Each structure stands twice: as C-alpha cells, then as structure tokens.
Amino acid sequence: MFKKNHPHYFYTTDGIRIFHNTNFARENLDPTRPVLVLIYGLLCSNNHFKFQIPFFEELGFQILIHDYRFHYSSSQEGDVETCNFPNITKDLHELLADLNIKKSIFVGHSMGVNICLEHSRRYPEDMQGQVLISGTVVPPQDIMFDSNMVDIITPYLKAFTEKKPALFKSFWKNSYKNPIAQYMIFDGGFNKKQVEMEFIQLYMKKISELPEILFFHLLKIMHDHDVINHLESIKIPTLVIGGDKDKIIPNYLQRILTTHLPMSELYIVKDGSHVPQADFPELINQRLLRFVSKLEKT
Image 1 (tube, rainbow, N blue to C red):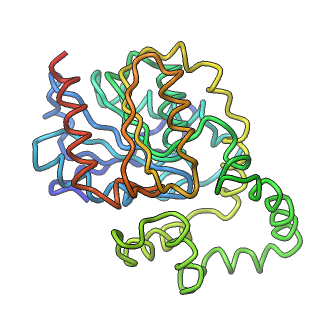
Image 2: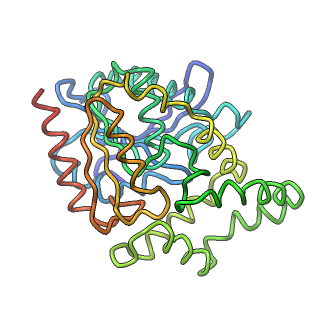
Image 3: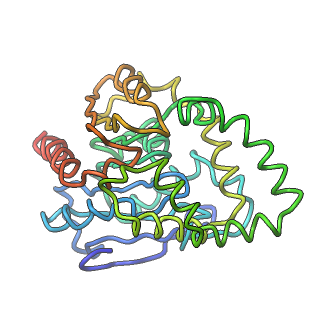
C-alpha cells in the first residue's frame, strides 16, 4: 500500500489487537506536520483510498491507516456488540497516543464519516481538521437510494440468515465471484464510466473476508448513532464532499452536515457517485490538498 510500509499491531486498554500501518517509522514522526488518518466505510477497506495514498505519499505527507476491531487484520474474536462507534474511536484515540501523534487530519468515507464525527466530538484534541465524504448522520436505512427500501428489506434478510445460516455464509464468502452481484454493486455505488471493474472485484473480495454478522450489526449502530445532536458543538475545520450522482446517500445529507457544522465548507463533485475519490481521484486529491495545506499554515 505504501512505498515504505511500517505495519504493526497495537493492543488497546481492553485487550483488542488493532492492526495499523504507516508510511513512516515511529521514531521518524515529524511532530510539526499533521498525519493523514484515512477512515474507510461500512464493509469497505483502505483500498477505497488507493488513489489518495500514493498522491499524498509522493508529496511527503505522513499517513496512518488501520483496521477497526472485528475488521480484517485486527481482532475478530469476542462480542461483536463491542464494535461500536465509542469503542472504535477510543481504539483510534489510544493508537494515536501510542504513536505520539498530536496533529492529525481525518479523511472519512461513508460510515467513516460517522467515525470522524464521533471522534471529533469525543477527542477534539486529536484533530486539526476532517474531511467527510459521502456520509450521513441520519439512519441510512431511511434514506439509502432515496427511499426506506433498505429498512423494509433488512428484517426479512436478517430472518433468512438466522434460518439458513450456512447458506447465507456461503453466499457471503462467494458472492464476489458472481458477475451479477458485481454489476449490482458497480451500478449502485460507482460512476461506471470512471471506475474499473477490477476495483469492484477487489472491494467485494475484501467484503468476503469480514464476519457475515458484521453487516447487520454495523447497520444497527449507524441507525442508532445520535451524533446529529452534537454537530453544532464540533468546532473543527471540516470539508464535506459529496457526489451529485450518489445513489446511496442523497446529496441533501451533505448540505445538512455543512449547515450544522460551524466550521465547514461543501464541495459537490459533478457526476460523482458514492465513491467520488475513486471516480475522480485527480479532482478529489487536489481539493483535499488545498484543504490540508490551508490547515498546515494555521
């Protein structure tokens, strides 16, 4: 992922193993410059930032990526209920302290927006700024695809998984091989003229590596997240980004964020999907650079 990888494990105060990787050695951290902390979305991975990582690394930026508890190379044992926003942000807060990172700028995508906002509410001292891409602070089940279709379907799907767990597990582990499933993901979440199918195939392959129970659990914690009640108290410079063709999270959600976050600005990407950083990486990278460079000067 990085030209110079420095992968490590960190154990939180409650004994959770968190995998993380940086493009700098711990002893070479430059405390005068911020660390970019990349925060991926629901059932996503750090591959969603594949176009941002080399761009900012080439410019000499320090970057931190990590896996949340119950995700990929971090601990997947124990009670999945502990995988919630307070604990995910606590884990990251402890990791930043362990690495002695005192200046950071978070870049969150989709569910990563919830994590960024929860972190900025609980640990504002960790952050110089944040970039929020394609997120929502209202229950996604109520607004995904501009309808409550997901809210209606989810209970039936969950009941099926409980009745036929082996069948659902097999589907979960193997759906990435199905071209119809690939196209549905491609059509629903991406600009098909801008993103290669290879990106979708890797995305779906990574999903198969996660515990199948995680999907319903993460939807639930996003549904119950109450950070919308705290937006006006978050006084951190924020860049809100959305794609004007986002089928998953309607564009007005980005305007809600910008309206209620006191120190925020909005950037809407023409023809951008739910993953504008993959649709138009050059455009997004330049906009991120402008925002980050401005923060570095303050």
